[in-house]
Image 1 (tube, rainbow, N blue to C red):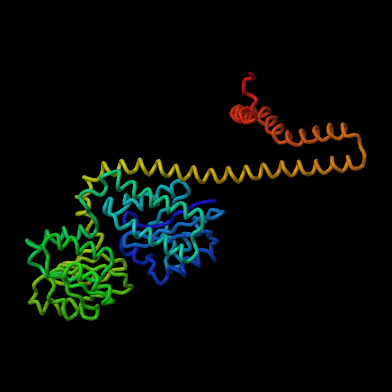
Image 2 (cartoon, rainbow, N blue to C red):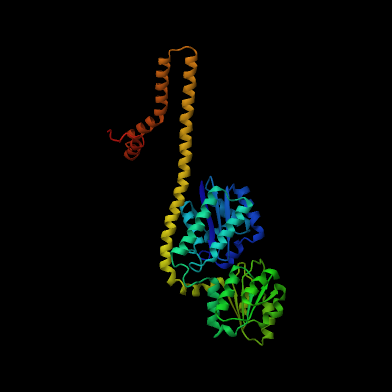
Amino acid sequence: MTLIAVGINHKTAPVVLREKVAFPVESMVEALASLREQLGAQESVILSTCNRTEIYISTEHSLADKLIQWLATFHNLDSKELICHSYLLEDDEAIRHVMRVASGLDSLVLGEPQILGQVKQAYSNAKNYGAVSSQFEKLFQHTFSVAKKVRTETDIGANAVSVAFAAVQLSKQIFSSLAKTKVLLIGAGETIELVAKHLTNSGVNKITVANRTLSRGTELAEQIHANVITLAQIPNVLHDADIVISSTASTLPIIGKGMVESALKDRKHKPIFFVDLAVPRDIETEVADLDDAYLYSVDDLQHIVEQNLASRQQAADDAELIIKEQAQVFSSWQNSLQSIDSLKLFRQQNNDVKIKLQQRALGQLAEGKDPQEVVIELSNKLTNALLHAPTKALSRAASEQDQDTLSLLRQTLGLDVEKE
């Protein structure tokens, strides 16, 4: 069984390409079905976030090249462009990679905790569809355990940083006091919820939450004592916001250049600070061309993020050791399955020989043949049959002067055990 991981992330591809390769929730079932039907993937999981899109599959044959081509075809992209910005990992490397991802070691913000929930959701989506079987069940459950171990046994979560935290930090650099600002949050998912917590901890008390569904928006708004509106109401309130932070799963921009122009006019060109954390983007890039509108995307947060990495680097080194050890544990489990299959086959072959010779001997006894002769013939034939394969292997190793194999065979067959 071959385990393959193919993907792109914030390190290998710009946001323009990442948003083209993102999988909306509504396309996930179609994608998982296509992986099974077109590529013959026995198990598959698709992880799609604002910073990465990764596909994990298990297969009897290596489908690496076909998998990248499939990804390009599914999104109507040029495979050559995708190859230039993607990475491909197999078996042990793929195992370590998924553990590093879930533990936050491969994130834009080192050690950020949201990615574990996103990996769990990707696994859950695939399992609900029926794309997860015994191997991926074991892999991902072990991965979740490893991520928890990393977070509890290292300081990777100290001085909490995340893309959400970086967005708030950037806001602090723009405004002298966040307590005096009015903030519009667009979306109500985990990222925006985290942004809201950081904002309230920074003294912001005038927040409006805009969400596609009022029920989910209300849940978040009640936690932070904020107002709640629908996405359709954004044009009516945008002029009142000093800071706009957006992160939704929308496939089309929510805020356009014209909407912002109208808001700035109503504000008498008092600046608005925009942070777009969504992929695909929620805010048209042309907004950045407007005077008094300052737009930052997830890629623009890289500099702030890097300032927060130093304190976590030692913890990351400790985490890497844990992952290396635990990846080996999983690999050993995989190898044990192969040894069990080999042992079953070995036993079955020898049992077949035993039954065949046993039936022959019983037939001879029924015909009245001398029992002593039958027993001698049975023992000779059984011995020859069981020794045939080991004898050939020993002869081949000796003739080829393969001392390592010869030594292993002698040890396996008990030939080097001293007699008492």
